[in-house]
Image (cartoon, rainbow, N blue to C red; front, side):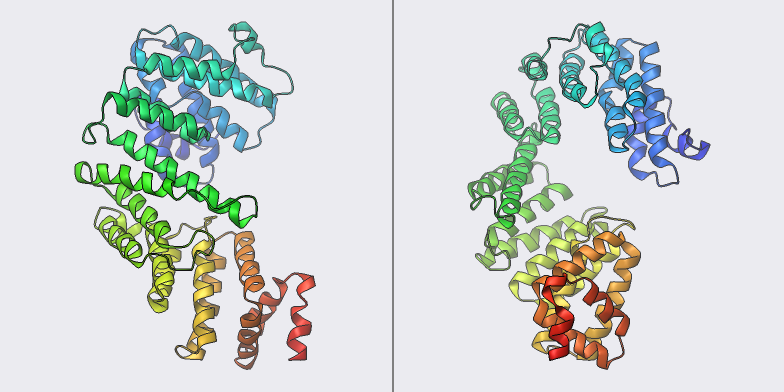
Length: 423
C-alpha cells in the first residue's frame, strides 16, 4: 500500500532522506504511518543505491539498511515482498564495504551480519547472498570483522556496542564497551560506553527477575546492580541528564527491594536515593511528561508503605501514557493499591469504590482491551478474597457492570461466583 501524501511529507521533510527518517519517525502519528515508514526507507535506500559516494555513505550510517527489512518482518509482510528490499540492502552493503572510511566499513560489516542472520527467515536463500559472494560467510565472522575494523576507535566501538545490545548479544556488547573504555576511560569524553554497559547490566538483572517469576532460574546476581551503579556514578558528575538519572533511580530501586518478593523492603536508603534521582530527572525538559518516572516513583512509595502517595503517582503514569499503549502495568499497580486501601479500611470506602470504577473506565479508553483484561485477570487471581469483599460492596453500591467484569476475568477453576454465592 502506498501511503498518503501527508505521511510521506511528514517523514520525508529534509533534503537528506535517510536523516529525515531517523529524526521524524518517532513523532509521526497518522493513519498509515507504518506504510510511510517502510515506503520512506525504501525511497532512501533506492536513492543511496543511485548515489553511492562517501557523502551518501554518511546517510547510510544514520539509517541502517536492515531497518526496512525489520519493519517488513514486524508487519508480517510476505517474503516475496520482502525479498527485493533484502537484495538491494545486500548490494548496498557490498558497496559500502569498499569505503576507506573506518566508521562506514565497521557499520557495514555489522549490518551485513544482521542481514545474513535473517536469510534463514526466507524459505529459499535470497539470490543476492550468492551474487554478492556471501554464500559461505558466517554472521559471526561479519561481527568479528566489524569489531576488528573499529578496535582503535572508541566512538565507533560505542556505536557497535549499542547495536549488539539491541540485538540481544549482551556479552559481546559488554566486551566492546570494555574495549572502548580501555582506549578512552575518561567519563567526560566516553560517557556513552559507561551508560551502555550500565544499561546492559540493568537489563540482565531484570531478565533474571523475569526468570524467577516464571520459575526458570535462581536469584539474579546483584553484582550486576553494583556494576551498573558504579558506571553511572562515573557519568553523573561529568554528564548529568534525564536518562542517566532515570537509570540510576532504577538501579537504586532494585537495590532497595528483595529480588524474589519485590514488595519486601531491603534498603530504605536505596529507595530514598531512587526517589531523589527521579526528582532530579523530572527537573529536565520533558521529565514531567514521562510515565516511566511516575511509575517507578509509585513503586518506590508502595514499598515504603506510602500508599496514598503511590496511588497518585500511578494515576499520573496512566494519564501520561499514550493511547493504545501496551505498557499497562501502572493500571495493575493502581488497582492493587486501591484494593489494599479498601481491605485496610483506609479512607472512605465509597470513594475507593468510585475510584476503581473511574480508573477501570480510563484504562479501557487508554490501553488495548486485551492488556486491560490481562491486568484485571492478574489482580483477580492474586487477590481473590479481597476481590470478593470489594464485589460485595460494589453490588451494594449498584456497580453491577463492574462486578460482572471482575467475575469474567477469573478462570473457571477459581469458581469465584460460587464462592461469592456461598458467602
